[in-house]
Image (cartoon, rainbow, N blue to C red; front, side):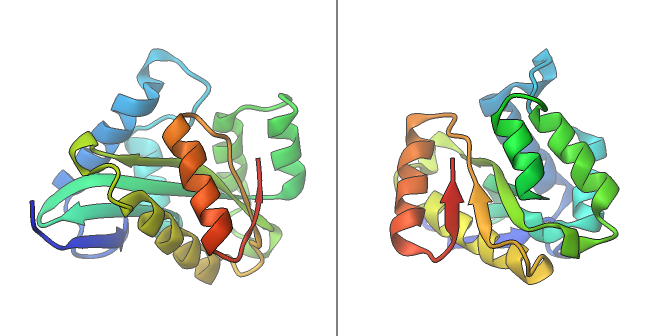
Length: 175
């Protein structure tokens, strides 16, 4: 467990199929999208699309050869995010919107933090904070107009993470 922690985009040539599957399983264990929730479906179709079209928006957290978690951010617009927070659309519709608007990345003026998931034996070490900072920076390279991070806190740990980001990183955060 003393392996160096690495943050790699899902499209990085060093990322293996096994690591992608490990990331999916960790995220599914937390969000349980297979049971029909309104979360973005954690499955092969969305993984393939994200890895091909927006690899900067899905960061895998590696310890040695093992994936111990991931961070997923989704490009969006403030208008769509306001619809999401008012309950007019759900998270799966945010994913559909990103897929249909990807040809015009200039359209996206914000990011939505879809999830930060880390195996329990690696939690409370600051890895999530570092991974999220890395994910925001990588996504903003691909999506230069994304100046706001929208968040929807799912756990107490997620709330703490967002507070750390607010204190230490220059991006507007809206919850």
